[in-house]
Length: 161
Image (cartoon, rainbow, N blue to C red; front, side):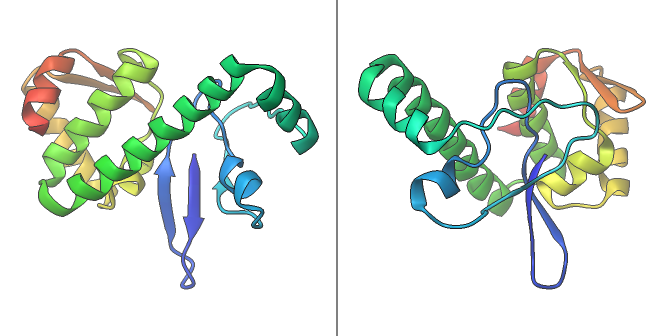
């Protein structure tokens, strides 16, 4: 997961990262120090790519530049969507939207805890549990330990508005 900490020590979750996701590109291209913290809840392999190598790829490989811009634009779209959603939707609709987005990236079997989901949308774990229970009764999801199986992604999209 990628997050930041407030001055008061509260964690703000910006995203749940998966295989092939980037982290650190903001600091790399702005020349600023660390912008995000990342935590793995299982095994993870990180690959450090030195700036001169990135510069070389940008200069010599147009497809790398397109891939990098696409990955960064995707992150920006998710951030903008989250800002919009957080200001206008109920917790149930926000959870439905996050789950529907994750299905597009990871498939219907999601490795995400209720606490991670709560941190991501800014509600309590209890609220997430209540909402997931309702979504499960509606046949949209199935809950397992540290996993959520999405049974009806279209239903989640419809619920998210």
